[in-house]
Image (cartoon, rainbow, N blue to C red):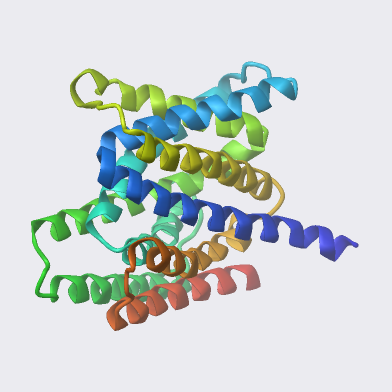
Length: 290
């Protein structure tokens, strides 16, 4: 019975990763149709609007100072992360963008050392070297293609920035999930992001058409579901156990990229992803063995 309960956070994380991968596919279609800024703003706003009634209906109260600080911090990081990531997937195949973003857990190892004062072990250094090598393989494969242009270069730069922000997000979500419930986390995650992104609305926002809005609405539902599942799982299991499950997102990305956009996966993407994943599992396995 105890073993089954221990598996629940793992299964919840798998479900969350799948939900968010499908959200990425819907958002790519919406961003191509309506623009990255408008699609990102509407997704954040709808996500908050969907999560808020759940939070209030379950007795939600205004968060305390510590939880509110974490909500504001994660909302700001997530706003920038979303804009850079959604831009990247309009310029790159979804699977490639996801693969490059997998360096985030490795970056998080060093952020944990900086923020949480954890020791960077030798295994983490080896893992980082493998992760860096894998990223170089993927990027070189993309830039080596004949159709690589300015959009490709900007897309790669955007996904690298997004990966750094995602690493910061790993640190915040562990603290946040221990200070607030899943519905509260999802509500403030979308709400704070929407408010910050909306600051540029007078100059950049264009109302999406109905087909794009349908994709955005679906993406918002999946965002809320994914955020709540992750918050629930991270409150019940250590990050080092759950972070490796993020790599199942590549398989989902390959599937949805092929179904929605007929995207093909290159050999360099598979090779680079393999190096990054192996490096991350080395770091995670050795850390648990200590």
